[in-house]
Length: 286
Ligand SMILES: [Zn+2]
Image (tube, rainbow, N blue to C red):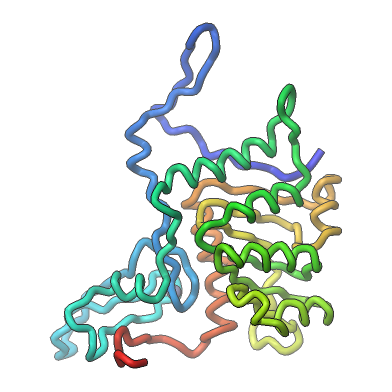
């Protein structure tokens, strides 16, 4: 019995079950579809999941610009450069490829991911659940559309292969601590084989910050795997024997919170620790 736990979001307060032809079906308030509004951007600096930049009023700076814009996760400030030409920060984020693009039909994509998770747990006639953790992981990765973030302590070749394959359809960003040399080579030494896999290896002895212990995989900002299971074959199979724990989170607010607390700060610390400000449209040729 896999110990891949699925935390089902609480039904909305209006969602009561009712009877149709003798069967009990859950109620669903169709207006709740309008509240389906997962994060639209990943900050170009920290990969924090956000719905836009935050702003606060600047006092007594003498500057004609009254508001400063910043990422609510890493607080990097985004300032308008001299070639801004009346464009908005949102346009700049789009130009940076920072949009979380889940396709024309966002709800259909979310439904596909949700079906995979539900099927993974379904038992009985016509169902083959519960699935091993590794299958659920592969099934979800194969449907990634916009991005994948991962963090692990150790990683196996199968997982590296799965992430490289995923990066052919959606960019994959991640960091791994405590990596054996052969895995480090596969992750970092052949960047042209999988150019959209941006993987960083952290050597706990050399890092100038605490090597992260978090295990986390985020797919499209809609789903997260979290828990004690590392991205190794042994850990995934241990989870199936109840010795390790993976939790699947499908509430996108919680997914964003996990990403912004455990992934984004480390991503920034690894890649651009010194950056506190970025200029938008500094140079049209830049
Ligand atoms: Zn940020």
